[in-house]
Length: 150
Image 1: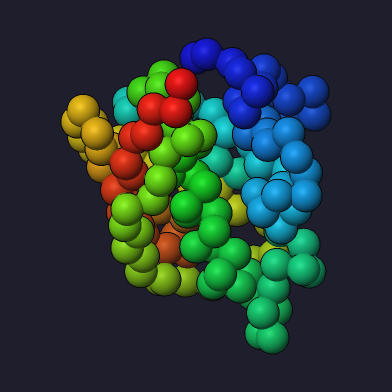
Image 2: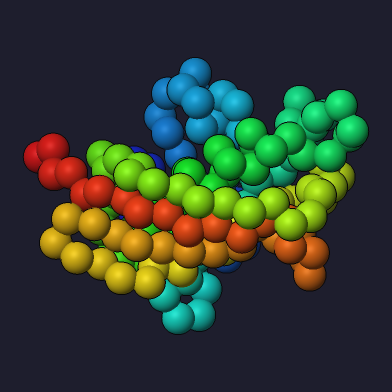
């Protein structure tokens, strides 16, 4: 796994996890979702983790659907970066499909497990689930467009 300004080496408080870091903390990723961690999983998969707070809840005291969708979008990029070794920070989201299948508990970490299904010259196709331990919160798929801005 290559480390750069977005994917940092091992997080000191979470062994085996790496921080997905945007240098400007006033931008959406960290400003809204807080600390985001990522690690490779078996196969072509990666896992991104966030730590929900009250800010991330809806009126029912569950994790807000908009937060879950935001995590999915960011996890598609982080998961693709970890799985393919390609820095996807300058890519764009073409499509995200999601099915909410359960409620998210704000007292537990929320993970998005991403699997890269196919990579072409310009696109990455991925799918995954948002989970809390064995509880599935949502199922998703997405398409990312690679953009080379070098």
